[in-house]
Length: 319
Image (cartoon, rainbow, N blue to C red):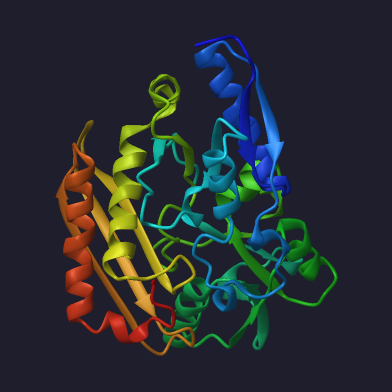
């Protein structure tokens, strides 16, 4: 490989620039080459519609992938939860680095916890998945909340709380950590309450499939446990034929016996956004050693969820 600068394609948002900057530093270390960020605007960045209306699937990704295929950038960094589940043959998922905290968090006025919110509290989120699980939890615990659809970057959403328009917003812990705003968190939502989006907290580093030298270099950043977990989660999503804006939550975690990690548990949930109906199941198997084994774990759980009526709970079905 030459010592010419590598071009990293990234969205322009503060969060995307922060996480791409972190990857750029890591890639420079493993390749010995400088990395320059190439800012690309995606449809999801410019549209003011809610993600469920514009389809969600691929709206933050397509422009970056097009730049890769045109040779305008050498590799791209995505939030993995934004990636469509079908991987194009001409592009390679070269690395999935170590995952950040996958949990959702609450940013609320007066440092309130979720269970301390007042009756009628307005909680902002752009995610049908979060709405479904928050409303289901509220129903089962006698809480009176209203989930309000919002768009905008992290700063915009937090401002809704500071300005008094909303009592709280729900965001991803990973995003706040990456932009140095973790001190805004007033409550971490347990994954037993709200399962995250498939792949939440993980990044995807993608390049063209024929650049084998770059793929080998980027693979140094791959974390095999993270890759196995997100592969299982995304396999569940794909087998449900659901897009990334559908109300589907999933999390694969490793179960240890003492110091030995010997099993992976995959949990999945699908629900109506009003929280009146949830299908939530889990399965456990040996830690996958290949992508195929991780994929099989996701398909197995999806089959069980579909048998329990999951298909009828999803507004959007992937094409």
